[in-house]
Amino acid sequence: MALKAAVIPVTPFQQNCALLWEEATGRGVVVDPGGEVDRILAALADLKVTAERILLTHGHVDHAAGAAELRAALTAAQGAPVPIEGPDRRDAFLLEGLEAAAAKWELPAQNVTPDRWLAEGDTVAVGGHDFAVLHCPGHTPGHVVFVSEALRVALVGDVLFRGSIGRTDFEYGDHAALLEAIHAKLLPLGDDVGFLCGHGPGSTFGHERQRNPFLRGA
Image (cartoon, rainbow, N blue to C red; front, side, top):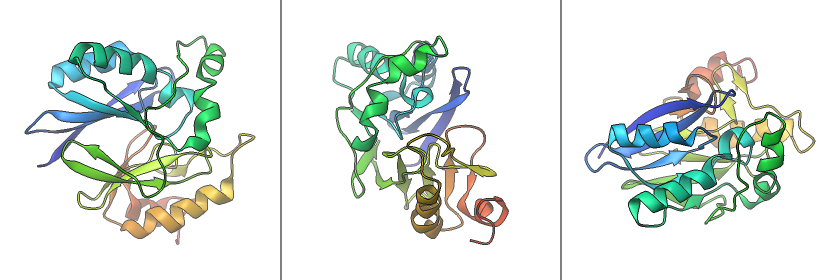
């Protein structure tokens, strides 16, 4: 069964909250609900999607600030737990500091603890499809990427963008580790793999390998 996707840019950061679901069953996931939870809930209702879980690629406020609120709202509405899965446990300090980080921009946020931490080699379910979990640090220590080799699609968060790569100018950032993750884990998946990223338009690994100034000639 094919997957459908919708992107909802949320908060002043215009972060791409993504919805992925099976068209036939309406079962799906919410990826990186950074805020504006009412808009995310409205989109789920309009699309008739039942969110079975919430996935987090990493712990930055623009990706995770709305996760706890969304979990509570979906669990109450659906009458069954809707777990948060991801990121890697190495981003725990960021998730524990969401409220403080959001206060700098006067944005709402709740600190959150995932129901399941993820690690390299795990899988997550999106409807009836399994996505592999890859640990891709550098932007944050615990950043993960979700990949379906069967569907030729990846959810890369802030690791890779169309024409750019994730910021590493944080005290915990690691530019070399980010490039290593892209070169060793993402590009080998194949030029035809398309990806959704945390901000802006998506692309393919092949396009970025050839055109991205950070990766050209890889």
